[in-house]
Amino acid sequence: MRKLSLFAIAALLAFTACNSGTEKSETTSQDTLSEAVVPAPVEKEISITINAGDDMMYDLSEIKVKEGQTVKLTLNHTGKLPVEAMGHNWTLLAQGTIVSDFAAKAMTAKDSDYIPAGATEVIVHTKLIGGGQSDTITFSAPAKGIYEFICTFPGHVGMMKGTFYVE
Ligand SMILES: [Cu+2]
Image (cartoon, rainbow, N blue to C red; front, side, top):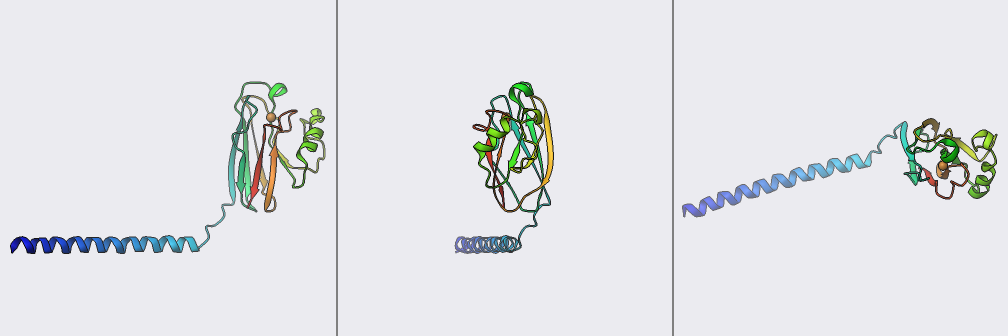
């Protein structure tokens, strides 16, 4: 008989513990829900680091930012080769640019680091850099949409390109 009542108490305790556990998790899920309903404020600034080395590749193929954000983008050349042999830049192109046509035009602009003077296709670009160098640019994200970024050093566009999303 004593054993039985102990069992009953244990069962009751277990039930209580279980119940309070349920209450707790309900509270938690409610909190999560209310957080989800209130949209998170958009960060004013976003920092992006993109690396490229002597392998002629960016380490990012996609970059996502929000409309109106200030984008602080750093390009690091992680290789050893000089700028004349393995120069890299990061060039954001306007929507509607035919990348292959623009890259062909940029190739001829050696005197201006392969960015044709006054090119309307270019929204923003870093400096052309060689191994061990970095360049940081700050710009306002353009209007919502999908853009492309490339390296305009001759012959690099085939390997060095990616998509820039403004959401
Ligand atoms: Cu390059």
